[in-house]
Length: 157
Image (cartoon, rainbow, N blue to C red; front, side):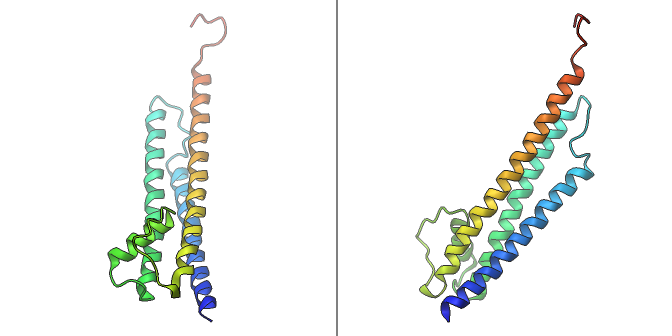
């Protein structure tokens, strides 16, 4: 029964973080559209695009931090750790798959910790794919801007 309990808690927490991640990425997309979606064709477009990349990067960092905090809260609620610092440290090193091993979980909840590592690497990969797609899209817009500004053939420019 203990294993089923671990799997149930792990599935619920992983599902909650996946939903949180989906909503966070959707909010990033909405922010892009609200801010012009990177479609600016103006001399300040490069600065605008750099700002978009910076803000989305910070947003992704905050999103992952919230997911790590969610796991830490679950560990505290389960009584796995007594101190918030220990729960956050363990959650951060597990979510990121660094796994120092200096703070470990008890046998009772160790499957939950292992699933956090799998969940973390999937969500980090999802964010990486999203971020690379964004930067590539902005790069394509920059290339379009260069083509737009190029003088016509024979203009002597």
